[in-house]
Image 1 (spheres, helix red, strand yellow):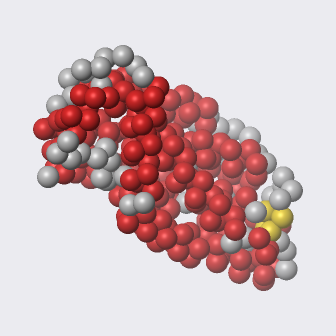
Image 2 (spheres, rainbow, N blue to C red):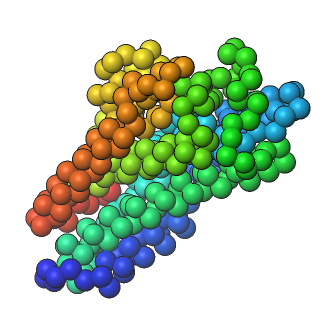
Image 3 (tube, one colour):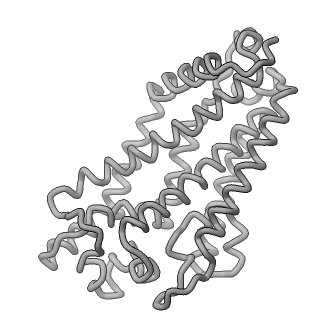
Length: 285
């Protein structure tokens, strides 16, 4: 079996998985996500914008998507569902592993995870931005629709003062999606690690339950929320309402998620040396 790292073999594994993923009928789940984003974020923002006669910043709905408790439950669900068949295992997987080598196969899977997640987030961002063209602007400043809305309005729930009092929209966008990317990658990594042992279904429910519980703790602002990775992915809860003071620095959250990813990938690389095709096939049969 090939034990050498081969960029060509890694690319072949990645390309094979990516093509199968992007053409999978489960990708239609992304349409459901677009509908939910429109109902939860875009329509309330559009109605407030029209009511006040003021445009919104085009980045504000995108930022709201990454900081919404409901969507932070839905986005991992959709992503894990469309990733459920991967890594793909079939009758010729043993021979495929023999030809490519276990280390190249697992590294190809890691590249596939990263690129597929970037594709998923890019789809969410672009599909949201496209729907705001008629009532938005792109200057790096919060709109009056956000800053002047009543606390009882839907806008306050979408972009609370914890966020717009602390940083510019572009900075909020960059940090929000970095945190979200790292969190979703950690979820995908957990599924990859679980697939090595044929425990994907169990791990899926553990991940989803931890997300739900974490969001509940975020809603009540319990100190225990920081135990759950999902809490570290929500930017606005890192700040106090008025003062430029951290509840927890987002850079600490980035560090925590980064450490989780590094440890997780080291475990994947270690266990891949003893990859068992029968266990890998596990619940896919």
